[in-house]
Structures are given as C-alpha cells and as structure tokens.
Image 1 (cartoon, rainbow, N blue to C red):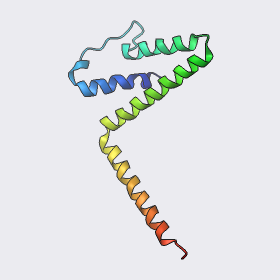
Image 2 (image 1 turned 120 degrees about the horizontal axis):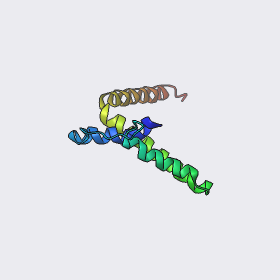
Image 3 (image 1 turned 180 degrees about the vertical axis):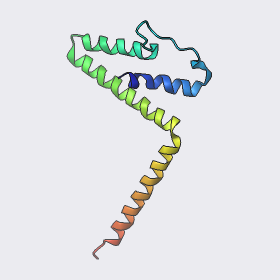
Image 4 (image 1 turned 180 degrees about the horizontal axis):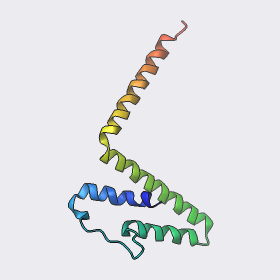
Length: 104
C-alpha cells in the first residue's frame, strides 16, 4: 500500500527535479508522503457510514491508480511508446485479416 501512496511523491519529485532533496520521516521511519494518506485511509475505514466510506475509498483508489498510470507514462515513456506501437501493429494486422476473410 505504501508503494501506491508513494506514487504521487515520485511523480512530484520527477517533475520538479530539486524540490525533493530533503525528505522527512516519522519516528517509525515512514515517509510523510506515505504517512498522511495512510492516516486518511484509516480514518475513512473507521467511519460508521459504510456506504460513504466505501465510496470515498474507491474514489481514492481510482485516483491513485490514475496517478500511477501517469507516473509510468512520464517516467517510462519509451516502454509506453513501444507497447503503443506494438498494439497499433496488432490492430492493423487483425483488421487486414478480417478484410481477407470476406465470403462474398
């Protein structure tokens, strides 16, 4: 879970370059970038309103997944480009195959 919470921090540090030279940690050795979202998640899960806490949990989950995808695209753009080109080639190959299989 800490890896997911760390994604916004890694993306921020990558985009701002020198803003992350001094990191802060709590007494347990946990990064502040992980600690604060973790406390927020714990607070959400402790709430009595199951529907609201479930909704907020899933919204936060979707947001963090989106941030992770942006992080992958920004930090590993060459791999993303290779996968994209391969997907386009496969799609074109399948479209070509469908054109050749016509019966009339």
